[in-house]
Amino acid sequence: MHTIRTAFSTPIFIRDIEDSEGVNDRLTRIILDMEASTPGMKRSNIGSWDSKKDLFEWPFEEIRTLKKWIASGVKEVTLKATKNKFNPHTQDMLAHAWANVSRADSYRKIHNHETCTWSGVYYVKSDLVKNKSVSSGNIEFLDPRMLCISAELPNSSFGSRVRVVPRPGRLVIFPNWLLHYVNPVEDDSLRICIAFNVKLDTKTVRRRAGTMLPMFRQSNEEMSTGSPQGVPYPIPEEPVPSVSSVQPESASLPGSTD
View (cartoon, rainbow, N blue to C red):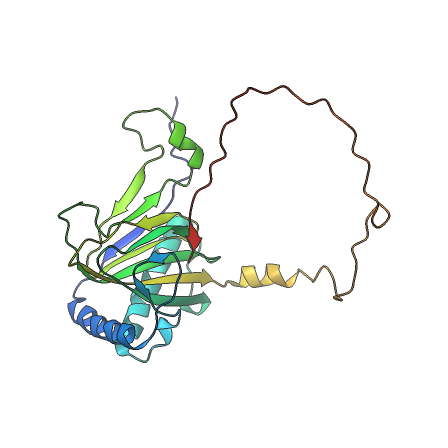
């Protein structure tokens, strides 16, 4: 008897909210009015407008409705990721969100999100022209197993990308550490979305944090070392290994943190 297991799976939650047209129309007006009256923030966005991360505090009923949709999605993806062993309460969810308005030639660089549990995006409006590329405005997720991009196995999922097409009313939730980007938006397009981060502030997290104390109680406290101050430990000399005349170039992945 034998088995083949799928290891290190990464959940990406996708839900198309039914009957969201009315909410989306009002959110579109709210966000465009905000864009017209406030300067944009610079994050991983190129050529597009980002609001401050205070969208969940905006005083509109549509924002409260959106928060309920997101909370429901976070509960579902958490249950899936924990095999139904952890069902978070809404009171455990710390969150912030921001709006984005993308027009011609705007895109988003490769990035992940700041320390939290889940990140996501809700699409309010998606009038995307796809004359030049069918990927215009799409969000794409990269395989987090970076070494597998070198695997030469045709038709396998190793090193592949997951593409999600923006549609009004579509809610996408994923782990905060998952690298992703947005393809350039073509001319005459308008893409409006709301991005968010959710941190599950559970009793276990708070209990574990409560056992940790500051390493240094005073600002002038010095670390004690086994070597006199200013006198480095002697480092034994080692033979220098021979190397090829051709050195591999170090590669770094561009990106920024939202």
